[in-house]
Length: 204
Image 1 (tube, rainbow, N blue to C red):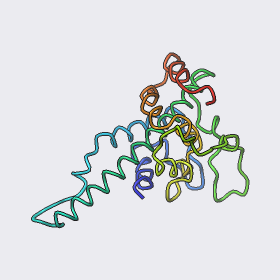
Image 2 (cartoon, helix red, strand yellow):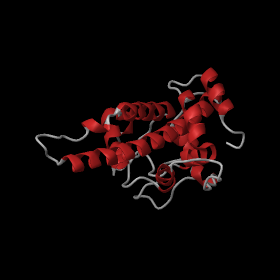
Image 3 (cartoon, rainbow, N blue to C red):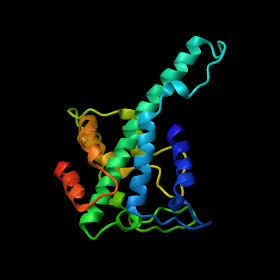
């Protein structure tokens, strides 16, 4: 629910994600990468202790600290999730930059499936085989599951699951994510693109 509500907020601060009735929004890879980077930055500095109010012993101290503990755990999962999403968006931005420049997300990933249409174009996940990470790769299993299986609820501008992020995160794990994600910069230029792609495993 935490991440689902986050995705509901993204169109409020990113007009490119809004759409007319019955139409899929068209936005560029750079728009998507920038929006995710800003949201990931917000999660980085969010203090779980300020999420809940505590006044004159209500809620009780034990309950209050338990709520903060759950929020801290949820926030840790969300940070890993967002970092993987940002890295995946950065890889797409790098590929676009080195193959002609920024472009609509649908050009590389395919159209977003619509409940009002019985047909859809091929999507990039049709060509990605996601496997559970090997034993020597450490991951946050909850974050991985959400990336693989999808957030709760639907979004008009994005699919609920994250095939590219799942594939990359499952391959590089937490250590690789911490090491490589900072290079998924926005805006992406040719030099930054080469650096980022050069850090990715050859199989990616």
